[in-house]
Image (cartoon, rainbow, N blue to C red; front, side, top):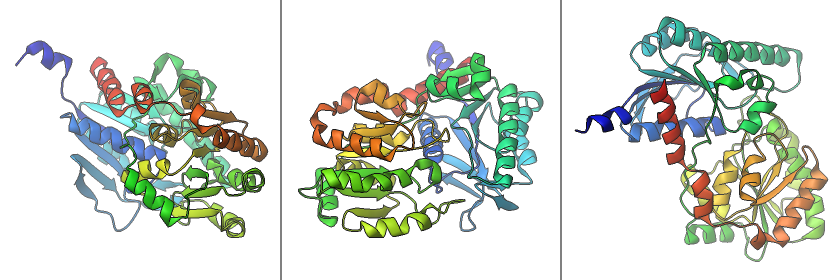
Length: 390
């Protein structure tokens, strides 16, 4: 064995803490799942400590080389959970691991970071996925403030804080206070190229042949801005009467949301042009993007910090129309593979969709060019480097 190689590439025992893990579906859980599996694939020992948010899930299991420990939930509030035993269980696990990776937003972030750095004396890295901004309401405003405070405490005790982009960090009310601790690491992206036969199956199933196709891939949640996409539908149809819309993502059972109920009548009104797919398995997302001519990311606030689906779409040859939000605009800025539109502006969104559909070939970039900037291997390299430094 080469001693220098062993020093350069040590294997770590890594503890990852977050509120929700798979099978919960969100950009955050996809990020952490890819990170955990990738680190395990490279020979690290990875444990995920998360919530037992659904009764049919095991409390302790191995998934793709990753040990997943789910802690009992006393009760849920809005999109959060209360786990009474998390601090003691987390400390016990911290003492058995070399590095602690905490993913925010998380109500217990402050306590976990304090335990990790001060009590267990472990290198502590916080990955800041996004700000928390719950729907209107007195109780939700109180929860927002509480989570903001505990996240602030968590960052204070952490050795480093990881953000997806500097653009998002400098515009975040919280992250902008801790730029000295900042490490920018692009999120992990892994997606097979579209399979031509599977793309044809999508086209046949929804009658897409001869039509331009607009895609959406996210939970039906307020912050994802799907309501503005639906407002844009009539204007797009006015200019391109044969256009079709494919809406992928969890819709009816989204925690803390009622978007589906509100949009149901509008979706029904345009049922000849709007198809709701529900959750698409991760392995098939490349085929979904391959069936689309443009993907929309009409997010409306800082709970969206990047939009992983943008890069996945670009890797599949599908341009993007994205909101002009810090971080969210980064992929289009870097690749020039799409258009950026003002937030909450259905008219501008519609016009950009039409612009891309009419000139798609001018927006598409080679897959290899996109993969040079965004890849899971690059993300894993950066995390390994950061853990090694600490």
